[in-house]
View 1 (cartoon, one colour):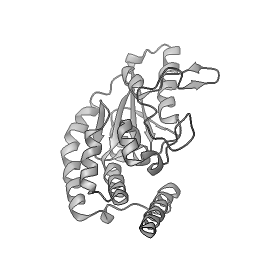
View 2: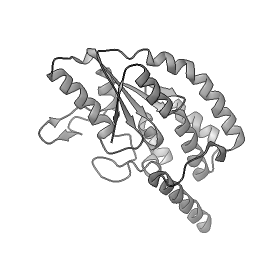
View 3: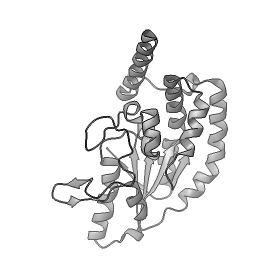
View 4: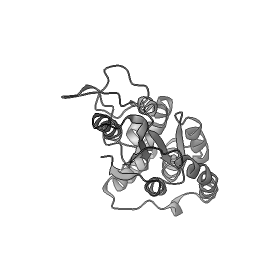
Length: 232
């Protein structure tokens, strides 16, 4: 049993190392054939809904924030800064269109804290808790408590996903990354990847749109007039 656990841990570290370094591309061909077929069908099912979702992007000033990794608080701080500084220069929130694309290992922020704890997403996605600086066992950006996030010179900032959504920020999550990481999580936990994927989708946060892929969404957002900003 110890050898098996050690092997799983080693394989996970190698996988995460490859993702982090960019030295190896994760191919969909490595996924189980049945899971891949289900994923391909799901990409098709999601496409029409996702395209319609992008029609909701409104406003004079539009920005897409591309979040491929957790990157501390930045995927959430930059949208807030965009809204604050537009407000300061005469453009209210209602006239700003903001899309955040959660892709690759940043997809963890699309799920509730129960999912983080069950699948150890903080370790799997290398996402730290901003307070403890350790792999998070919760989604720190969903309904944060008062005083959770402060910035020198700015004081307390409201950068929770729910708070940003209330300001009109739109969030979407990459289905390809969900497919890949649910397969990895399933292998680590001896679970059927299809069951993991089903569980993850059932526990998506309210208002987050599943899109066929993150790069697809980055392109669609720009087609709808959004300028590009890397959220890192």
